[in-house]
Figure 1 (tube, rainbow, N blue to C red):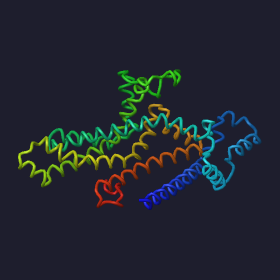
Figure 2: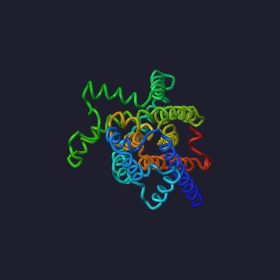
Figure 3: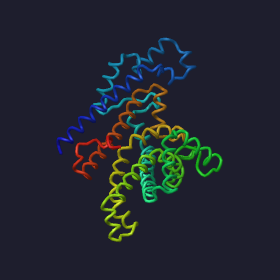
Figure 4: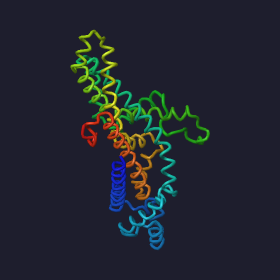
Length: 329
């Protein structure tokens, strides 16, 4: 156990180190000039060369890549992730504020996608070869082939602009302080983005649950239960759902990365002030410290989801200990 924990910690450290260096490299080779973007086009063109050089030196953009990365890494090891150029605040502070908004969105959409996917998959398996089964499969194929941003734009136009059922965007009404926003109002602003984001993760869980449930319902012990006179409902509840719930849960934990990736596009469409929107702003502004901080945080979340899926997979079936759950998807 201790050995596995140590190996996992080393893998996480190497992953974070690689992610931080690759992110710094991508920002360095980007044609975006952080000084020009953050001070504004007009101000940058009107200021003198000495002022420009001073700003480059102040923000460290004139240093070589390895020197900048080494300086950032030394500070990160002391707990200082640097200062965001885009938000003019410590990166840790920006991450804390944005994570508070994204955490609720990610958690709600992740749980909703798992629940809806499991229910649809179970219904399709019980009603296999029926119209309901074909409808669920067709829905899953359509959702798998549809980009998240297109779904978000369509939902925004229909449910917010045309019908007016949901706010057009943001996490709270414009001009209202956070201390004056009730939980009911927050959930109203959260509902549509969470629903759209959950749609991106329904298909894998539903199709996986359907296949596993059909396999269980056609197994020898299910046929034996029917021969003993057990009802189909009892067979489904006692044998079917119990045997497919754990694999579906493991698949859901392994899909954390997909939800996090789709949240970037969904937050951008709905102007939701979370990590995804901050990542886009940091990328367009050449804000290396903030972009690296967001990349490290999301990498840690994805690593934690995959690690928990592997642990749960080994606990459910001891024969698979040491097997990567993602290889079974």
